[in-house]
Length: 116
Image 1 (cartoon, rainbow, N blue to C red):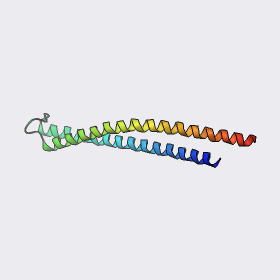
Image 2 (cartoon, rainbow, N blue to C red; image 1 turned 60 degrees about the vertical axis):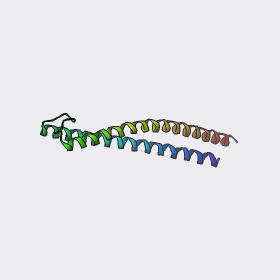
Image 3 (cartoon, rainbow, N blue to C red; image 1 turned 60 degrees about the horizontal axis):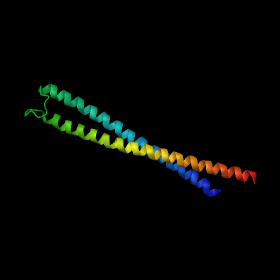
């Protein structure tokens, strides 16, 4: 039937879309991790230059404070993206299962038509 074919194509499209979304989340997470790592290195260099590693010290470098805040914000974003990634993985699993069901129904209909 034509409607089963359309349903199967729709489900395949949904699976592809869920995979794309998951890959996008993973790419963003890896980019944020890279940026946070660079900031940590810059903080370390700045602390060595100043000779002060305590962020509460009155002479702690302003750049290091700002970089630490940005690195912390990136880590928070990474944690939030991880939650979204987990949800996206579940959605992908559901979409794959729906596609498999639709494909099985289409195949069954094709076999029934062939017998008739």
